[in-house]
Image 1 (cartoon, each protein chain N blue to C red):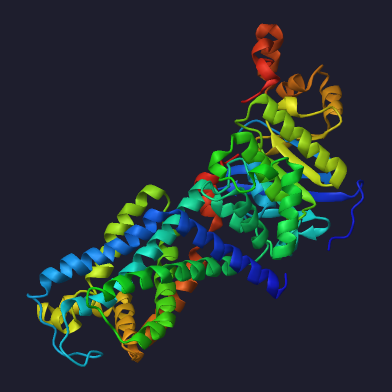
Image 2 (tube, rainbow over the protein chains, first blue to last red; image 1 turned 60 degrees about the horizontal axis):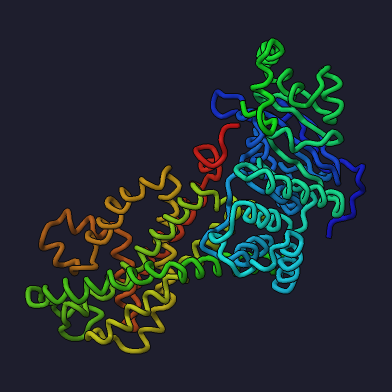
Length: 271
Length: 268
């Protein structure tokens, strides 16, 4: 069993991480820390390197340079120990549409070596938590996008990970479903002490007190709280701070009257 | 991770393979109909044209249907293996593979479990075919059905490993049709599934040589002998050797980054 974590403890350490796709440098020696029980937003436009970072943390890609440590354990040296402590919700749905909700959860739990009795208990608990117990025997194909996402979150928690990675988990959902999922994950941080790394380009999902790592073209531009980010960049909102840091020229032009485009509906910045 | 964690993971993989098989009823239907069409149409038509002399393991003259049955059993295994490797490519494309790879268990173990699970799923298909074939005069001795079991698992592992190895090099789902044409059909036709090797030799030395180097030939012969309660040691040796070779190659060739980099995770 995992030793209990206190909220101040460093859970995830990313250290001098580099990754190249051939000649293309996707990550250029980035480093940051995530604390237990914190909601940590990984903010960046498309192509920033967020998915690459997630693939490295979840060992879908092999680390080329640098290291990732979870609770002090190096992913390079003890990948199994690290993977046991990570739950992941991918950007692209990975549920088997032809199987039932229960079968999908059961499969995941089996892959983590959980015995039958514990599996059943945890499936019930997690389905209750996402309020989808009534759909336990439904085929995933019959569920809407929001429900599928919640099932994926439930699945990611079955093996009781300390770190939950969500890669653009709300993409394609309506604003109500997005908000519900965001609130649910925040409750997990608060109630369960799970550390959350939430990759997004939707600024509205970030709250002032959240830790934010701003990733752009494989480099970290800022690593502080959302409030501090606004303060340090001298902007009134996170949207403006984001624009100022990731595209200074556009931000300058926006001050001359184009701001409305950037601040459009939902304050969504999708570069 | 203790031994029971490994066992639970294997059970999970096997259960998923079974569920997918059960839910895809057309898969079972086609797995059954395909060899039956060969048995009832092709073999019936050739019965008069092809006389099969007494060759081991048969102790008397046999009808062409009886001769062709082991080849059709191997065909069921071959198509199941290719179906399984197709689902690997599909999982890789659609993201399902990542669920498997996020397991803390060694990837080689997960791949071997998937291979074995797929092999086990092919067994009911084979026995269903043999049960129907019984009604059409293919009546091997009953103990043969028992001896057949380990042989079927071994041959299914060989063909599954070959399929898994090939799936590592298939970048897109659409390319799989090419594999069907250039691997499955030559493997089946250039073997002893339809004609005995001595007939192939009569037809030409090159054809005979190709048949002799085709691992599928040895699967067919191993099945043929097992069905009649006998062991073909040469076929067993070749099948075990090829199973080990292709399994090692499949595990070494499996690169999770291929799916991630080419499609799954964008370079972002």
